[in-house]
Length: 210
Image 1 (cartoon, one colour):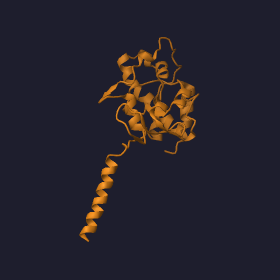
Image 2 (cartoon, one colour):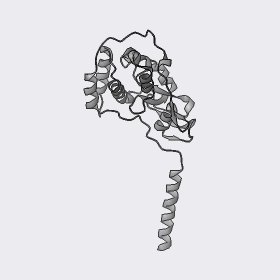
Image 3 (spheres, one colour):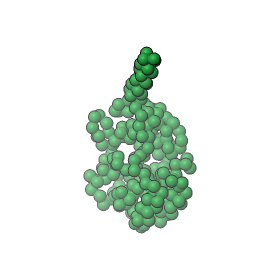
């Protein structure tokens, strides 16, 4: 009986060790996505106004992929966080990523973009043109809200700098969370939105089941 118990304990220990040193499991989703009710409340609190111009805009005014220590930059951190598993330390090159926007799985980080949910150019038109470069850098590297998500390069590039009135994820099941992430980001950063954008977000969030 004692030998049997020791054998069971040994097997359990080996399983635990194997799991501990296997590919690193991660959360696979951005943090702090609001509930349906909270998203609607925050949406209705946002200032509605016409978008500003693109005069003076440059991506260089939003320094991004800042160093996060231990050889990692912001892109690497999001790749590790949003993966189903990762094999590498920084720089991250291989793992398994489910692209939430279009439902495709990838195993090479070179196929993955880190999307700014609220694009940098959209932020510029919505109030960030008056920010300091330091604040724009914080926005472009925001790991505390749902502003950054690892998705397929093709879906990110088809989006460009469009707002939800003209672009939403091709996978319909992603549109609820996408709208809530958009609203949370604009709320966190005090950005405005235009009327058509608010209408599209209201429709998407009202269709949420959670």
